[in-house]
Image 1 (tube, helix red, strand yellow):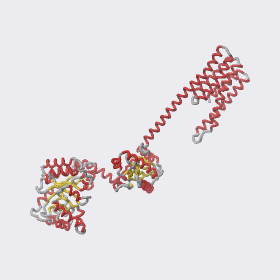
Image 2 (cartoon, one colour):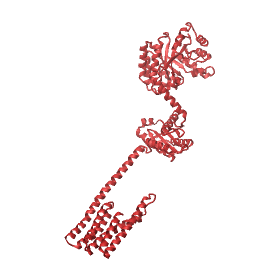
Image 3 (cartoon, one colour):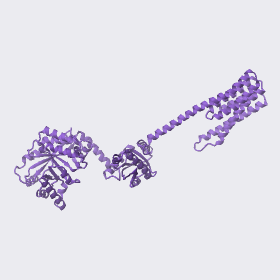
Image 4 (cartoon, one colour):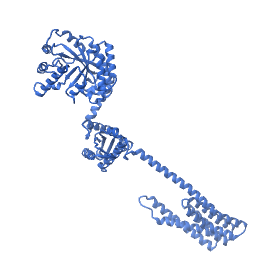
Length: 622
């Protein structure tokens, strides 16, 4: 617009000085075209500003047509001024206007080379022709220079066009590269769904933008069951193809009710805004239904199931991290309950996790602080009534949490790798305590299946025996049938190594596993401890009596000692003695007691007892 005003003003000055009709007419036309171009430009840019509707092409066409006419009129003005006036000042002014306009065109219209070259020709050709008609060395030279200027301006325009084009191309490539990197940053490269970062951003954005507690959101954390077995047996390529198919089926099951993200490995997270508990469970059932048909991967038919944990906002989490943590807890519950199902989060899960974490932290200092103690429960010989074995049992008295049951803290110790130092401490303490007993009394220590799979148990046993001076035959290690569930030959090797040391081995909780008779055939045990669940029902249940009798008979045939656990009534005690159990253990005989009480009991026991009846009498008097 400024160029139109400048050109129009200069042409009016030329017309005013020249006082000639032809010059005046051309100058008026220049002003008219300049005003028209300014109006067309104003309307065209106003249309472009409204991005909600396309600009009308008529304004762009009018502006371009005016530009061609404006360039031609400037050239005609210079031609007329040169040919019909003799005023040198007007010649300089008119030629200067054209030269300035031609220079401006070459840069401003570099995006459209043909427009720039055409307008340059329209303005400079009449001017050059006019200069040549005037004649004379100066005018002729200037005319030739104006003609050559056309080619110079064309070359400048093309060069500028190329530079601008390269710049735009580089900007476009950068924008494409940025978009590619953004996609790589937000989407999983394998499955094409959102990745963990995008999922976390989406959750944070939802929590930041929610306006009230009525805004709902469900998070479903899904994990494929036994996916590792597929990867290990069929390879990662098959596993990757399976994950892609799973993502497709999840999209179909979700049906635009939410968003899918791959959290990592075989874990996917579904984010469902607006979903309440009922809708979330419906989505979970739809997802599980997608896993009913087999997955066809290459030549393999894969039957795959999934487990899901569901957490709802805002009731189950105040922020994205808490909500995801609770969905993960619910997933763990679904796995624990048998897989191929979904589970909803409940705050009791959080309380249990907090309790577990609290116990885990406290366990790490319990030994150092002297909070763990050993209690001993005597096991009596049914023939002599004497104490034959003392089973060492760990007891934990926390200064703040109080007395904590072994049934609660032993699983925690196994999960946090604290079971090894606890067991080695118990072995050392039990061997030292047993040195103060009669030579014929053994000490029994329970061994976790976790230790059987490691290398530290034989070394720990040897260290405890050497430090205390206890004879190996007086130490009895109790193991349960669970040590054989993942038997890869290592269990058999460790048990044989322990027997070579001279230790006695006891099979605890006999009858509660999966193939007890098979274990007795392949492994040598010195003692079989019958689980208390069988002894509890011998008074009323004929099946329990039959099982107890069979175990006692089997043990005699194998020349193995037996212990009837959990004796709590006189009838159970009498039946155990009559059935032929060699040893009995239970609260009716003696509860677990501290080492001081045990030593007192050993000193006060009658030396000549020939049956278990006096023991029952002693307990009644106590």
